[in-house]
Every structure is written in C-alpha cells, then in structure tokens.
Image (cartoon, rainbow, N blue to C red; front, side, top):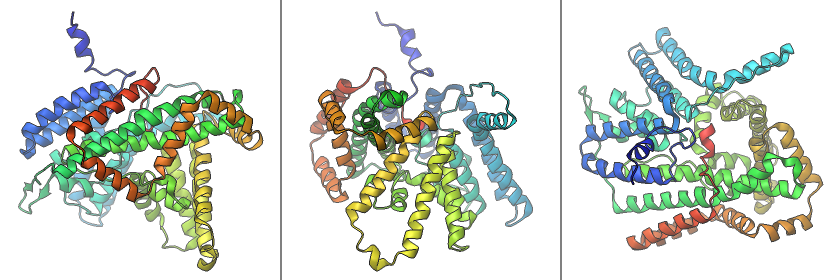
Amino acid sequence: MFDLSLFWQQFLYDEKRPMLFHTGFFLFLFSAFLALYALVAYRAQWRMWLLTAFGFYFYYKASGLFLLLLLATISGDYLFSLLIAYSPKGSFWRKLALFFGILFSLSFLLYFKYADFFAAQLHALQGVAHPKVDIILPIGISFYTFQSISYLVDSYYERFERPSFRAYLLYMTYFPHLVAGPIVRARDFLPQIEQPDGKNGYQYPSISLPAAHFHEAFWLILKGFVKKAIIGDFVAQYADIVFATPADFSGTEQLMASLAYTLQIFCDFSGYTDMAIGISLLLGYRLCKNFDSPYAALNITDFWRRWHISLSFWLRDYVYIPLGGNRKGFYAQLLFLLITMLVGGFWHGANWKFVFWGAAHGFLLIGHKLFLRFIPASARAYFPRPLAWLLTFCAVALLWIPFRALSMSDAWLMYKGIFSSFSWITLQNIYLNNELFLYLLLLGFAATLLPNTLKNHLFQRFERMDFALKMLLFALCIQIFLQVQSENVQPFIYFQF
C-alpha cells in the first residue's frame, strides 16, 4: 500500500540526504519544476518569482533552517547596497556603508567557519585545553558570502546598473550555483535577468532555448554526471580507505590514493559545475565556465587560470588587485600573490592544512614569476613542454595530499611513504586486486588531458545523435552508476566549503 506520509517526507530536509543533482529525487523534482517553468517562462516576473521560490526550497532541502541565515545575508546586503547607492560618490558615508556591508557578510562566515579555529589557537597559546564545540557549517556559505561581497564592492564602483530587489533576490538564490558555485558576478548575471530602461523601470530580456543550447545543456549534464557519479565516486572509494588510516598502507598504496583523490576532486567539482551550467542553460541563463582542462596546464600560473576559474578571478579582483597587484613593484607583487593564495587556502577551511596548501601554491606562483623574470625567453624555449607539464601535474597532485588528509601529520606520513617506500611489486598487486580501479583511473586522467579540438568533435557527434539515442546513452550511464556506486550516494566535495 502506498504510504502518503512517507512520500511527503521526501520533500522535507534530511541532513543525511541533502539535495544533490545526481539523485533520483532531484531528477523527479526538477522534471516537475521544468514542466511548470515552461508555462511561465515567457512571463518575466512570474518566471523570476518561480525561480526564486525554487531556489529557496532547494537551499532548504540542502541545508534546513540555515535558510534563515541566507535570508539574513540577502536582506542585510541589499540594505547596505541601497546605502551605498544613495550616498555621494567618494563620501565617507559611502565608504562606511561598504565597510559595514562587507563586515556584515563576513560575520556569519567568520562565526560558523572560523570561530572555533581561532578559539582553539587562542587556547593553545594559553596552554589551556580547548573544549570541543560542534558548529555546523551551513552548506554553500563560503560561495554566497563571496558572491554578496562582490555585489557590494561592484555596487560601490558602479560596475552594473542597480537592479530591482526581485532581480537581486533571484541573483542570490539562483539554485544551480547556490551551494557550490561557480561564484557568479552581478555584472555578468543581472543583465540576463533584467535591464534598467532609464525611466525608473526595467526591461526583461526574453529567454529562449535554441536547439544548440538544448544539446549543449544535455551534453554538460551527461558529462557532469559521468564525471561525478561514475568516475569520481568510484575512485573515491579507494582514496577514502587509504586517507582514513594512511599508516596502515604502503607508500605505493598511498601514492595511488593521492592520484585517486587528484582525479576525484576534479571529477567531483567540475562535474557539479558542468551539471549546474547545463541545468542553467535549460532555464535560459548562462553561467560562467569554471574549469578549462586544469590538469593539462604547463605551469602553476596556467593551472590557476584553468582551475576553479570563478574563485581565481574573485581572488584576483577583490584581494590581489586591491592589495596593489603588479602596480607597486615586482617584489611587492610576489608578496601580494602569497597573501592572495593564503586567503584562498583559508577560504577552503579553518585548518592549518589548508593554510599550508594555500601557502605552498603561493610559493609555487612566486617561483614561476621568478623563473619568468630571471630566465631569458631564449633559454625557456628549450625547456621541454612534456617536462613542464609533468612538473606542474606532480606539484598539484602532491599538494592535494594535505588538502584531503585528516591532519598535517597524516600528510607528512604519506609524503614520507611515497618518497621512501614505493614498490613496483606492490603496484602489481594493486593491479591484480583492483583492475577496474586502475583502468578507470587511467581513463579518467586521459579524459582530462584531451585537447579541446577533440572535445569539440565529440560534442558535435553527440549533437547529431537522435534524441532517442541520447536518452539511451543517459540510461546506460545511470545503469553503470548503479553498478559501481558505493552504498551511499556521495555528496559533492565542495559542499563542505
């Protein structure tokens, strides 16, 4: 007999089952939402309110009553943006409104993400035991906080036309990017929602879904699903076991686990953003690209132009350039790079391992700047591209170890094991016992290194497929997912940030 109460419980928040793009419940819910959306898509205001309402529900299903925190951030920041808008340019009051607006946005992030960390450091300095405090981190708080800060700063510098509250609300609650990015700029997204007509009113750009956009959206969703649910989640099973107790494994197994996590974090995060961009395209809006084959980078600067692009550009525009960028001399620029990467590392988590990760990337960027400055271009031309790629990839992969490890001591243990006890015999045993894992690992890395021309060719082949064949391919991917998945559906890695 059908249990109606059990059915309705699926729509309530469950901390063990947050809303995820690759679950059956989201597929069911989004299909129903799309049907309703199609009825109001060409009525701008109805469309905006429907998207906003779904965004609020999506965040509630992902984070429960922390929805109230999101509401507080949205309301407070909009009020501060009004204070900025109505204050004279360059005035003390305008600067004060910006300062308190940023402080207001950061206050929630500082409490939920960093308060316990700073308290622990203070107690350590005093030689006092730090009481364990369980502060639950609201999902997506780092993303929507950075988004709200960019809105306030860009409002101050008038980098976009001031929107209506309705448009601002949709911008802050647009569900495809709400909980794990990409970090969307108001100046990029607001013009897609509405445009001031100069007569105290607004014009609403019409939305459309050309066949090319539909094919692109379906391709991105399918590609993201394969990355996350098939490749990322499968190799994660090996990585999770080793990283849980690295002392129980050999250096070879630790190396394979670090490679597994290197692939997992890319497939997981880029898979999420592929699905987010694809879902957004189905709704008639385009989000910014967030990954561009980062593991094909030939140097660390190139890597950060390709990895988590929205965060890299945010740190550049709101940390590095305000510090002085490259305007205050070469050596000051190196210091600003280091500070920026420290901020980026600390953004990922209140833990010394993230500070180390950010600092290490900062020093690598400094090293690359020094290399470009003091090694003549004629000499650099002889540096083999394959070697440049290998050095960059190894540096990035090795630095994912402290990022994933439970502690810095575990990270040092793994570094020691990898560099002192690698064994080809152990690697052969891993192959004999985990053939599918190794094949998927090799296939996954090969896919990350495909040239853009080949990727475009594959998309064009997919675009020419019959719709029935596309659906069959999607069904096949779901079946593979069901065969290789672990017992529980894995949440996206960047939900924790």
